[in-house]
Length: 547
Image 1: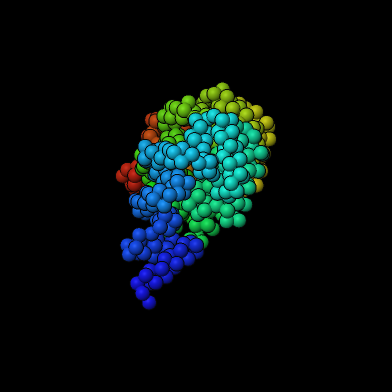
Image 2: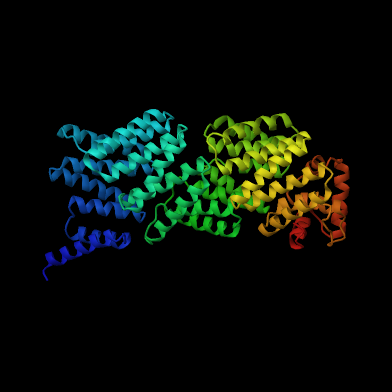
């Protein structure tokens, strides 16, 4: 076999590996051929995509630039413009905006100089439409995506058809025409399944769709898209981009469904992948871990993770504010949530901030402010409707009604919220609602009903390891027993608050007793348990499963 024949055979093998999505082997074989004999433009484009999909961004950029130059030398300006477009989108995705815009401008110039009317004109509309949509002009962006779709139909280009269709769907959803937009987004899923979309674009569409669906609280579709993204990633072992975001999305769903250890494990894996190839979801991985540690009662670790999320560009709200609230720093929680609300207009993030603000305002005894926040939350829930947001809004309004003294009306709202959380298979949130139902029952002098609701919530919190919630429900329940250390019920209640990091002043405020009385109780706790400090008392409480 001659060297030329051997090289041709290796090239055919590299192309075959590429078609089978064996990205690492395909890259290695094509790169090996390229060292022996420079690849042609089309094979350089394959090399660039394979490099991108195994996380070799510098090699992707180099191969893409060479593909562009080779296409020009081949006298194929349309193909050169296509490669320049892909180079530009890759650069924009990495955050190198000047370089990305330079490549897109180069693609347009090549087409203009050649006087070509080709499908690449439609491709160049896409980044412009994305920019306009990001600026909030959804009508103009929709028109641009529609124009790109017309060009795609004229040239029968499936890749451009899919991008234009998805873009139209997203702009319709963001402008309020949710049902029409979802129909187009659903079609994108079908196009992916049919193999109409190249692999480097599939991951982008998956991640974009999941974020979009989360923003409108369409949990069912978000779960379907996350599962599909997971299957797609798992089918390509060498894949590096998109794997980290996939694990973050999966962890969020696991947490909602009460699988907290599994969610933590997925987030650890996500951080490992995102360390290999960072992207915009890196901050979300740290934030979500912070949320889990907050719920588990490890406030120091939670704060550390929130700060790292912030460093990576993820605003750590409402989690950090809820942490401050759990620490008794009510004013700090209110201030950060209000700042977040002042800066946020998007429906999804605003709804999460409003729900947390209701809690903070009620903790500050600002019932009027809490009602205003709950009313806005109810308005957001109604346009368009979403079961997840229904649950959040009804829970907030139920808490406000309870604080206003209308326990009967509160129970109606809270029962509706609990039913929605149960339908969504969200045990932690459902248990939190049952605590409020228990308090409403107590306000109506139904002590048996109150204890049953609190007992049910306690079992869920104990199973999840939700330390702070468990401490609170035990402090509210009259059936909670004290069998360790000879502590009274009040001393156990104070010990649990000490373990959350609260100061004597914060405990006094929460229990409506004097700071001097709290100090006496804390001293008695130390004496009975034989410990010298608050930290030692906290360790004792964890060791003896008092939390």
